[in-house]
Image (tube, rainbow, N blue to C red; front, side, top):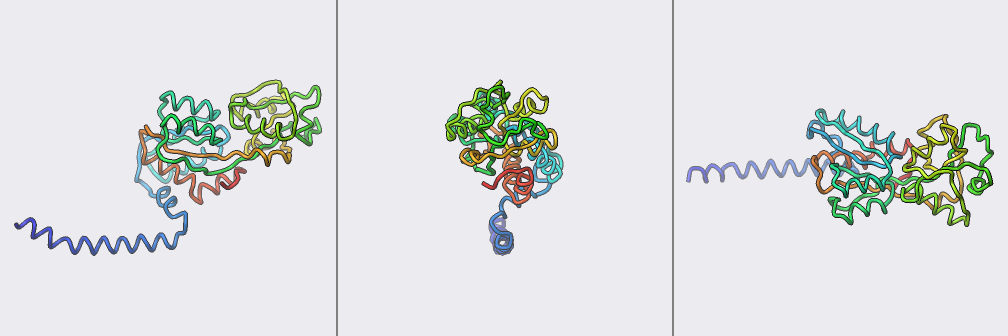
Length: 272
C-alpha cells in the first residue's frame, strides 16, 4: 500500500513534466520547419558510438566522405567506414551477406535488388539526383561538343558497364538520340571510367556531372541536352541486418538534412 500511495503521489508530477516536455517539443517542431526530425537525429551529440558501415555509389565518394567526418564530429566515439563502388556490385555484396548499416545507391533499380531480397529496413528515400556529362581532356583537344561527336570513327570513348547506373543512363541517352556507340572499354564504376580519361587512355567518358566537378582541372566537362532524359534518382536505406541501426538512422538523417543537402548540392547533385 505504501508503494502504491507513493506512485500515485508522483504521477501528477510525472504527467506535468511530460506535458511540459511535449509543449517544448511542439514548440521546437513548429519553429524548425519540415527538416526538424532530420536535424534532431543528425545533430544530437554523443548519442551514438561504434562503427557505422555505409555502402555507397562511387559518385558519392567526395560528398559522403565530407559528411562522414561531420558525423564523427557530431557524435564522438563513432567511426564511419565507407565502401564505395558500382551500385550493382554493392547490392550484390549486401544480398550476399556483407555486413553494412546503410546503402546509398545511384539508381532505384539497384536499390530494388536489395529491397526485393528483404535486406532493406523500411522504404528507401530518394535524397539526390544526378545528371550525365561528357568528360574530356583539359582544353577538349578532340573538339567534342555533342553526344553524336562520340560516335565518330577513331574516337576512344569509355562508358560505365551497362549494369552500373551511370552506364544504364548513358545507354538510355544514346537510345533516345538514336545513336550507336562502341566504347573501347566498359568500366565497373564511374570513377574508373573517369580515370581512363585522366590517364589519357581515352578521349572521353560519359560520367556524372558531380564526378567531372570533383576531378577539378584534370578533365573538362561537356554538357549535352540528351542528359535530361537520363537523370538518375539516388535512394538511401537502412539495412535490415544493420549492426548499428540507430547510428545508421542518424547518418541517413544527416544526409537528408539541410546541412547534408548543402554538401551534396555543392558537389553538383540535384535536389530530389
